[in-house]
Image (cartoon, one colour):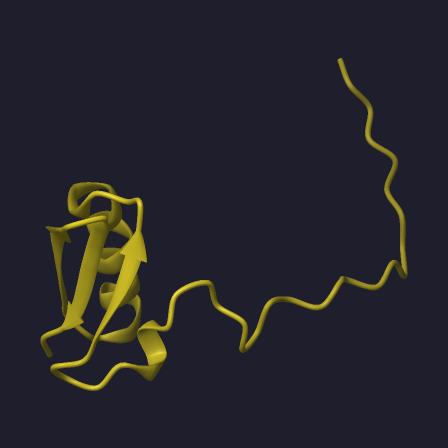
Length: 73
């Protein structure tokens, strides 16, 4: 059985606040962004999860060279 050493007063590294990989929070209804080299069905789960978490809705479609994500609500 593994034993883990408990340590106190270790500061937690800063998160990625404000530097999200995709600009979901910057989109207004009707805006979109392009993701090169990714099929729509591969990215749809990411868009859905983000929308659910932030009370937004997104639509993702495969396009030439990648996919595009639109904010629809």
